[in-house]
Length: 220
Image (tube, rainbow, N blue to C red; front, top):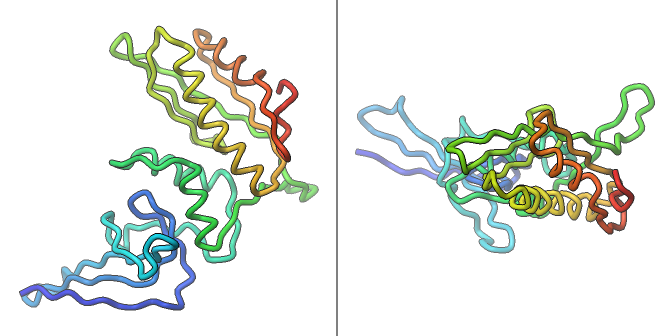
């Protein structure tokens, strides 16, 4: 016979990523089988924020498989945040960077720019390397490499370069809005070794974006 037990964790300050959501873990649900207690499974319960005041059970992995993002009050780098953006984009119901950022802020954490080791000055220029692959003749796939500090991804019509540009620009604007809200002045520059799409790269790098804190208006 199986039993369900809930363990409250009201003082936990751990933010986790689960099923496309970043939230504070406030408990765990255990499923215990009397005949095989060693195979007990546990699932995280996260704070519901403004939507669900009492919290909710995430339908993703078990607690031991759920990555810890940070602690309440901490600030994480864009590179770490990009890891969860990539995971969110690959969920059954995709999550955007701006949605994850809102969850991070609502849970009591923030973003920070990385600093130069020698001077401790913030790094304010980021280069995003794009891999662009065409397959099935008409459908292409574009994504940023793991070394990039911001994650981009797009499926596009290979005969329509504007399709790729518009998708990437939409994602870029999300990041710029995030950086602006955090008052983190920075610029994002795209690169790619794929010569067939250099027109898209050039357009991304020269489109002026009017911002408050980011340096994206002058051609990059």
